[in-house]
Length: 400
Image (tube, rainbow, N blue to C red):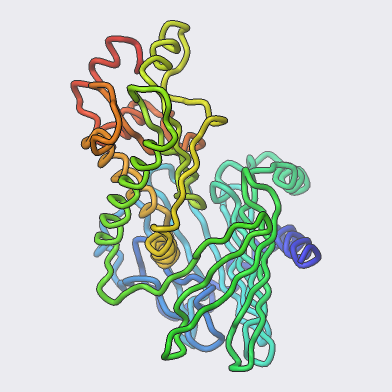
């Protein structure tokens, strides 16, 4: 697996030479359709069919969105070119799909710097999928380089940045029924480094994939896929999981929190890859001490973060991950955690522990959130904090 990983990183380096080939794939386009999000996830391509992950339209004016996705389809009706543009920050990405007999690739570029921001590659043998490699540059390449840097400088900078790559390389194993029974993986994840895992596949009585459970080298395991029920929508899933998570968090705090009353509870997560929050709890005394010392109140001590057991929630979490993958965005996970924090704030931990009058729970990824003008205040409001409380915090110096 180490060799496979390094070969894929070399493939990423090679892709720096392929930005100019985008015109070849544009020329293959016979029809164009639009969407308000990523649609054609290469992982869904089985060698013959390629389902969309959501609605498409031939008229881009049907879409009221700040992010417009344009898909070009070749003569066979397969997506061959994609472009998406963010109106807010004027950032543009372009990518192409390359179909060959024994492999298929999706290669995407952040066009302002030429950085290959994502590569997905599937290899086939005898029409069976034997491997999958998936690489994304953290931040989709937007902050990975400047236009003034040379190719060699960009590659060196990204290679030496421990938080740059989100990468998984997978090799599949087939059983007697000619279906995938197991998969071996190697990962590079920001904050976690390099590690391995393996997956076990479960099928229902109709031989349809039902579950995938991942076993990590550290000894724990996690359900990473669970077939969605027919009546499950994104709204019902977010509501069900957010409330169940909030109640589980409150129960966890009753067992682990020693100092009362509780003043603040942070649900710390990492957008794009981890929506199981670390719980950073602060008592009224801790907040008072920070204020007296002139320290920032809302950024807690992560060494004392409380672990959350999610065994009772793993089916809902697996379905959330599946739905986010289908939609091509992590916004659903963010929305779920914001709602969970709102449940905790408004219910005051469901009355399970003593809390302050201005107690608040908030969900945040400090690597990308909370730094713009009023951005953290907006997050607090989303998490159920009353405007009068925010006004009080500004008066006391808790919130600047």
